[in-house]
Length: 308
Length: 309
Image (tube, rainbow over all chains, first blue to last red; front, side, top):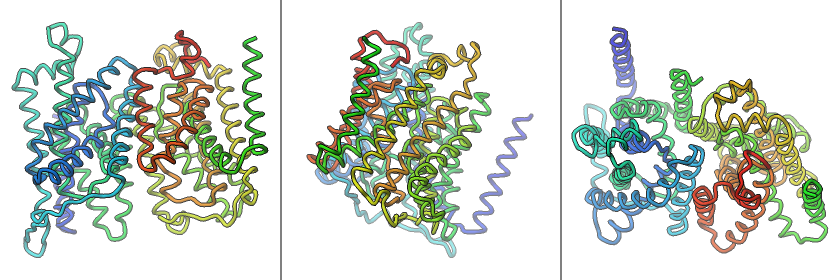
């Protein structure tokens, strides 16, 4: 009963906020939703790793950056593939990268204190972004694609429609992952390992193999997002870093293991940022809103879980 | 024998460091100054790390100190030396206030929060308008000691001595036992009567004070503070890699790591201007995987004294 009441409260709040935004500046709603799609698509693979392998991967955003570079230099420059067409091959390549990263580093730190794991993935992040810096310098690279500027007009308002692909991708990822985890044998095993690795091992699940599969899969999904990311903006070595933070924030906000929740939380975050950007002269402050939300979320979570 | 060495080696090292400007050229002196800056940060970072809390916000408190010192001189007409002290106090007060909230967080939650705080400080400096100079930052009218290179070097060395003294004081007092106990097992530490929160706050405030001082010295020594230079992620990355390489949870470890890595990095920087920082990432990786106790840990023998020197 109490749960229901809070659900109604949330829906009411969301509806009120949406109505207020529509009344104020309808384009803000569009941009907010588009942002949210990208955030959710990047965050979902991190949730998978955190929920099952129990590793906070601070190299998450850097892996997406690597995927975008692979898509740009190998798929586009060398093979003349469109970033959208390249999504699948890049995802396969990135799954391979994920496999290597897991086998060479993460696997050896699974039993180490959490502190060491955190610093380890931080080191991976630095090594990846600086390796790209070394190879391609810090120059920004951008593709010019005709179709990304497609726009639509509703009444007086016109806006770009292409970024909605991120929303589509996020929903596909969320639904696909849910099906994978509940319907397939490997997925069910992964869920079991996530809940209790020792118990899973006792009933005969190969824990190490499951971790390998899940980590490679997650990095492969990051590859999908990374290739598509190339259609959105210029890429440079530091482009992925902020997405690590944003993803972690969303996962923490939704609660580990709650993939659908990530969709709602990214919607809230995307809209909040779009609103700040919509206020004239306040655009440069939009980052602070985001970081304030991270901190507030973490604190509220800690409070609720009585960690405090 | 060992205890004489323990006093003799640091004293000799200090004597060499103090005398360095008399026999070295301008270039080595400039390198030494930057290495010592990172050294002080590395030692200060480790002081909090001993309790098991990883801060990714070194650059945040460093930058806070840098701005506090610059604003102090420009807006409050403080003398540069006083402003450096003010920078430390300011960073410490901010750490105290924030610490009451964020030190209740553990593991990755604490780390991400410190990283986010550093970003918030940067955005505030960026958007501070006239007070912080906005994106261009602030330029000092004059350097401390008139920009005399030797004096600037000794000033940084002074910060290093302060950090090393504070760190060894931590090691020699009951703080060390408390911190090691907290790192090992917080519940059992609490049940043996350790006031965990109090010790975390002390460590956080003292390490932030040191980082603020170093930031203040940086600004007064180079004459400018901008959001991108003062909150540069390198001020988090380099000290972290140095402390790891040398050996965590000690004073000697970060010192050794900073000297080795700092001097090595200077050569690398000349050889590869872009991406030499990759070496730091790789070092962090290799150390965590193969040598988590660091160089000093190896030197002390495989037997790992818990939290020892």
